[in-house]
Amino acid sequence: MLWYNISCSILQPEREHMNIVLILLKKDGNKKVFPIRNKATILGRGPDCDLRIPLPVVSRRHCQFSQEMNALKIRDLSSSNGTFINGNKIENEAEAKAGDRIQVGPLMFTVQIDGLPAEISSSDTAILQPMPDPSKADAEAMNRSGTFTG
Image (cartoon, helix red, strand yellow):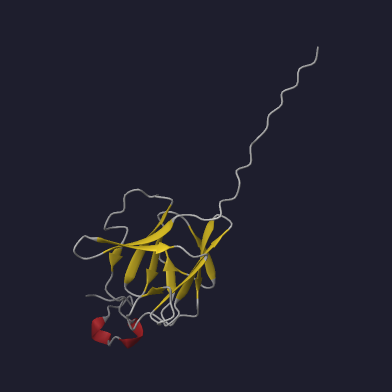
């Protein structure tokens, strides 16, 4: 008698829409939630953007969030000051996962996908002070290593 060990896997259907939000913790500790509801969402300071950030360091059309094949893609739209994911500048496009940090100008958002991560702390998300520009510093503002001293 022959016995066959048959295993099968059930393919999960592709979801058409993930529940994605960008979370910003304000200085007073309150959360500001920005839902990403469209398949493509433009963030910038321009009046035609889906998510408006009216700050001069944010480009008119700064970056785009796209839901593609159960993934969140972030594309920098040739912004002046760049878009960053987990501290790394996005050169063209990057994939974001739940818990990743996205920086646009002085704002740091945490990506929440389908409720994960469930808890977001101030160390994950914050309003940052603009980074100093070393090219505009005088010699007294820098130490010998080329970094700011104060």
